[in-house]
Length: 74
Image (cartoon, rainbow, N blue to C red; front, side, top):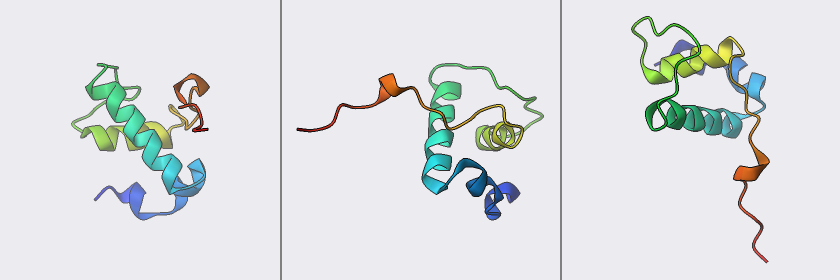
């Protein structure tokens, strides 16, 4: 298990578990599907470990593009 995920510090930093999970999922998609480059050195880390390090170093944030939102159901 990744040590940073055992603490509530990273959850509190992003404003909740849902935001943390959404950010991790978004970044995984960027790295794996879209072929984005890591923002920190990989140093043999897994994708999840890499993303956690990017979050801890404030390289990525949970700010989402409003254009990605689904319109409300009427």
